[in-house]
Length: 271
Image (cartoon, rainbow, N blue to C red; front, side, top):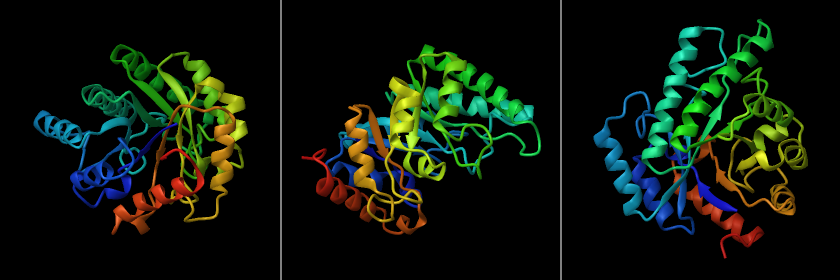
């Protein structure tokens, strides 16, 4: 697998601190979390983008994937509100453009939600149409969209691997593939096998994190079992560590040290 830490838990620091740490680690690529003030996709001048690109290269790193913030921002392309849908599509269009500039091959994309007291079918159709529009744009730009499931407390659209498979099939674009997040998967009472069975070769990215989006080994998921099951399926795609729990915000370097320690103790990936 191709492995990369995500910059999410460095959100209280300049992006340089994250790049410095990764350069000193066994990893050579990153999953770039896109959020203000580090990388504000709503308003990010070309000069800052050039500076970021130079800094990533100066640290001898590449960008495996980008994860635009869309859970706490007004980004939702499934909603019945047309203005929010249209602005959300423009937001992801900018993300696709940014990924192309940074020579990043893939963008994580989450679905948003429809109003919980309105028909789910409406939100489903808005999701399919919106992602389909973005997929056509991504195809022209050579960017892959990594479609992610979310918890029932967050969305009423894509919740399970079956939902992902159905949506990907309806969109029918080579630019749209699926991914699995260990936290979302377990919350939905699904398994690694479910994802490989339902998505097959369309499963192309993994968020490998313990319960609550913590460092592997810091919570109670059977992370070694998950890893062994992923490997048993012959998975050779990309995998990033989405560490979001606020316990890591004050000392984010410690989280990367924990990831490295767990991987070395339980796998041969970093040998």
